[in-house]
Image (cartoon, rainbow, N blue to C red; front, side, top):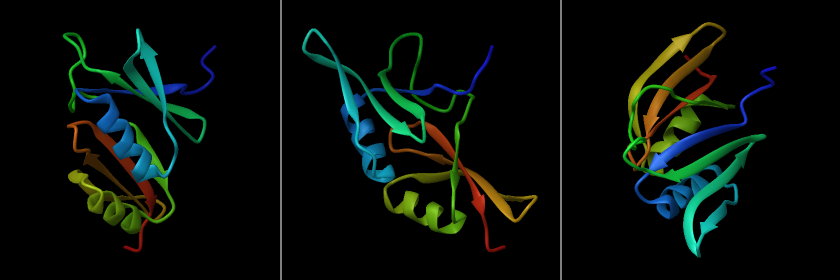
Length: 122
């Protein structure tokens, strides 16, 4: 029945700016979706999971409302530094967990959260 995560949606006030920021952060090209010649969304494929940027509306506001997608990273400290240099700010953590792993939540420049989990030196 449930096969896996297909997409993670980020609701943003500026689809182009958000998609460009993540495209540069992840070094993955983006694809825009148009309705009546107007950009209405953008998509980045991250390891088979669609990261979709949708224009925020009255039902879905940008921000930290609950669910957070965590991205696996090879080197936690390096990924944390890289994300911060691209304008993300640490929101929660980092927290060292089992198996020499660390996790944290980051806030992107558009108010949405994403998490990271990976090997740590600590």
